[in-house]
Length: 96
Image (tube, rainbow, N blue to C red; front, top):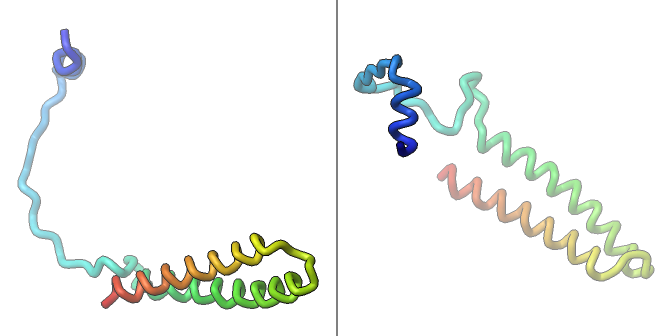
């Protein structure tokens, strides 16, 4: 007995009724039901994080000059800034 036959034997009491899907109202894929703009909120949050990270990066540059952090740590800051900028760019391209 294969899995399909086992399934059918276990659930033989169930009936399935299939009805055609009615056309739903066209909904903007970029908004919540409350009317909040999803890409706008995400972009706002990412820009806020980018600003905070940029300030931390400036502090890290000073620390690097005083040999308090390694070059790899500084590179990690730069990479995270690059990632945030790319995410913001993708959101801008998606919205347009």
